[in-house]
Length: 159
Image (cartoon, rainbow, N blue to C red; front, side, top):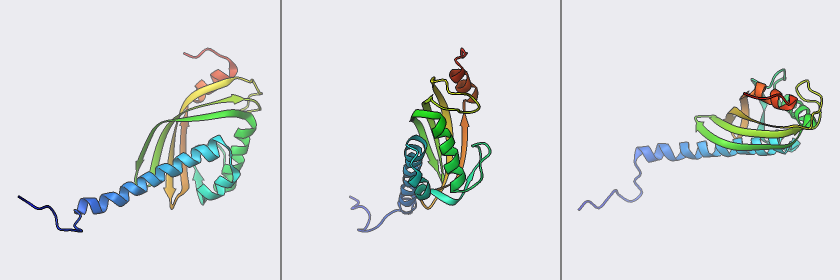
């Protein structure tokens, strides 16, 4: 009968896999925090904590890079929307990137995307891709159902 590996021995796969899995889980935790603290609760202090100084937004519309650009974008969204909810449907991490598919909803209570306040609630699917370095967001890509969002806010029938 084989007694097993010598005490203290780990296979090369375990040596390489454990730190990688730990980093992926850490990056997923950072993505969750960004969604909760910045996107949902609009915590200004979380921007300084979770966003890198050299942050690059790729798809938020006209927004300068850096923390202040994100801060201004979040303030604009917060002025137009209330009761925001982000339900994470899927989260996949690979390397320094985390992809998150979410269902978001909010009520339009102020000017938003060129529309005057409607008081209507919307619910759409979004995909966010976060590139994380040292526990902070460095780059962000965002895709969302803009037509569905606008149709719901305008009170139009959706197909």
